[in-house]
Amino acid sequence: MTPQRPSRIHHVATVVRSIDAALPFHRDGLGLEVERVVDIPGDGVRIAFLGVGESRIELVEPTAPGTGVARFLETRGEGVHHVCYEVSDVAAALADLAHDGVELIDTAPRAGAEGPVAFVHPRSAHGVLVELIEAPGGPAWARLGFTPLDRGSRVRATRRRAPKATPRRRARTGPDRRPAS
Ligand code: ZN
Image 1 (cartoon, rainbow, N blue to C red):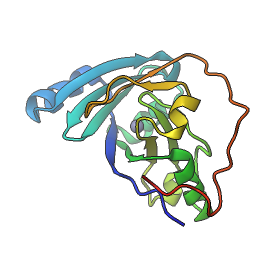
Image 2: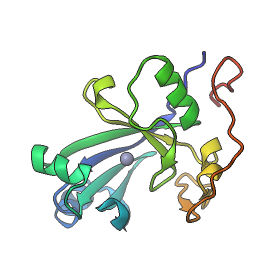
Image 3: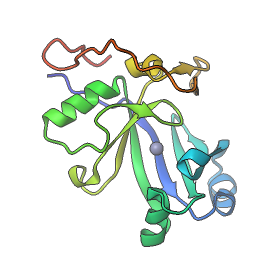
C-alpha cells in the first residue's frame, strides 16, 4: 500500500472572534500578506487567508450561532482550530486512513472554499482536527465542479454551482490504486 503522503501544510486555521480585530497582529505585526477575505454565509463564517510561503494562515470568524465554529469559540475561546494537509487524491487518502482504522468525519471529498476537502476526527489524530485538501487538478476537482484559476504558486479554485452527481464511480480500493504523484 502506498500511503497518500501530504505534500505540504496547506493552511493552519484559527478561530477568531473578529477578523477585523485579528488582522492588525497578523498583517501589521507579523507582516503576513492578506490574500483575501471572504464571507461564506452558507457556513456561517467569514474567512481571511494570509500567505506564509507555500502555506497559509486561515482566520475563521463565526457569523452565525449554532455552527461548529461558533460552538468552538464559545467553549474554548480563540485558538487553533485545524491543520490542513495537501494531498494529491483525497478519496485515496481517506481510503488509506479508513484502512488503518482512523475515524473520519467525511468519508468522501466534499467542496471546500479552495478545493475538495475532508476532515479526520481529532479522536484519531491525537487531539488535532485534521483537514485534507486535494491538490489542484486532482481527481475530485472535476467531480465536484472545481476549476483551477491559474497555474501559479497560488492556484485558486472556482466552482460551478450544483455539480451533477456522476454515475461513474470508480472504486479506489485495493492494490490497483494509483500511487501518490
Ligand atoms: Zn481549513
